[in-house]
Length: 85
Image 1 (tube, rainbow, N blue to C red):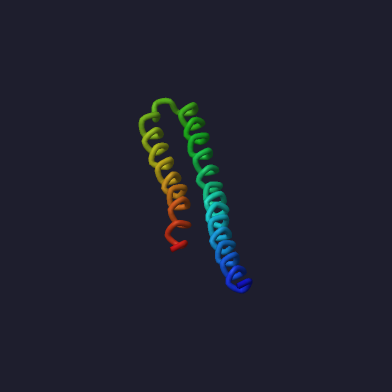
Image 2: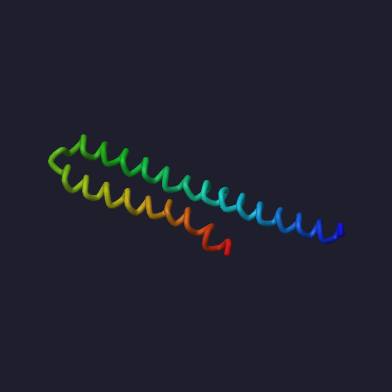
């Protein structure tokens, strides 16, 4: 009886560890896009301040860079769910 109980506890702990690893993986995956988004917006504001006449082109590239960084964050959210199955 105790062998069955310990096997059940081991399986429950294994599931718990997988869930925690997914959370850690997403936390680490969110660092890169967070830094990237900060750099994109910071440098675009600096570029607009230096050349106001180029603002439409800079703004377009800023939103493109933001979208690409955000895709990395969303991939980091989805990947732990894919590999947990």
